[in-house]
Length: 255
Image 1: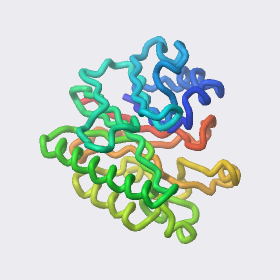
Image 2 (image 1 turned 180 degrees about the vertical axis):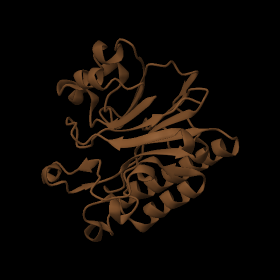
Image 3 (image 1 turned 180 degrees about the horizontal axis):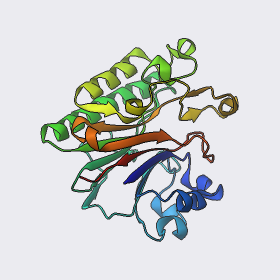
């Protein structure tokens, strides 16, 4: 099973840049999207009814902001847009799909760069999310978490760590949260297969950083340790344009 994740930086914008052609060519079993920036009723029919896929969209109260989406060839047993994260569910940042064999959480984590208040919101979201994933692990669930985390974990995960160590996205407390999250019983699928540097998923558009590969790895697939033997590959697709992020993916072997 091939599962992909992509922060499209606006699904309608990505559509104009060939999103459907790319999806047809790549043909993932499951595609998770972040930052769709659209209410479902704002999307054209061709994005909501793609042959061979079930589609699900979660949007926030504010139009043109945040939002997540899910395209799946396999119909999930259950799709939920709430994890019980009180105070953190108005921005449309989470969709959970129950595939019976595992739970898939597609998440667009907040960005903390705008202000101290938004950093506090981001860290609060992190903590509330971790509490819910710990609960799922305690129940013995197999869990895959994917999406835009808006934080680079280690120095290897961004081109210029020294210059960014005092900015949100690479702050000690943000990075420490990832350490704790992994210690709960998750692993970073990409790092299980790729230990070297120069692998990024986001590049600043204003400085044309992508051409120079001056980027950040802030998009992830995490999986619970009880799925480790079934993750057969993890990869980035940096050649795919259409957003300031690139798609990434994993392959999951049948149980």
